[in-house]
Length: 136
Image 1 (cartoon, rainbow, N blue to C red):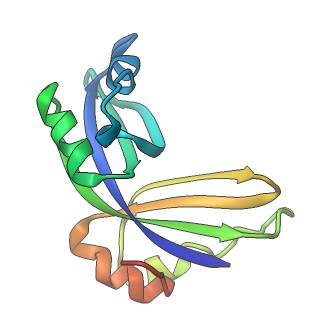
Image 2: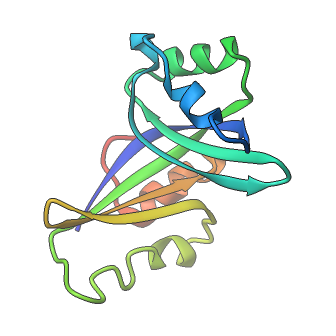
């Protein structure tokens, strides 16, 4: 299993048809997103967690629309095994360290498991230590 640190920007959208498309429909190169997880979060709002190529560029873009945004610490956990139970225990080190996950999203991509874990900035260093992450 490998763990890499990534910067994550959380952006609040309206929960309505087309809101995500409007946010994604930009030709601003500084707003390029390498990955995105979006979902309805209740109360007429949607939550979008983005891994930007340029954090300051994406923040400036979100502010210009204007959309509420904030930075989080993220971790991409990769596992080459794809059999049932391969993820068992992957987030246990965070629980043992008292780090709460804001988001956890997993998928199988190109024959490997990939999991995005997002935590509050205040928990970033504890998460790095717990996961043995690289790059933060």
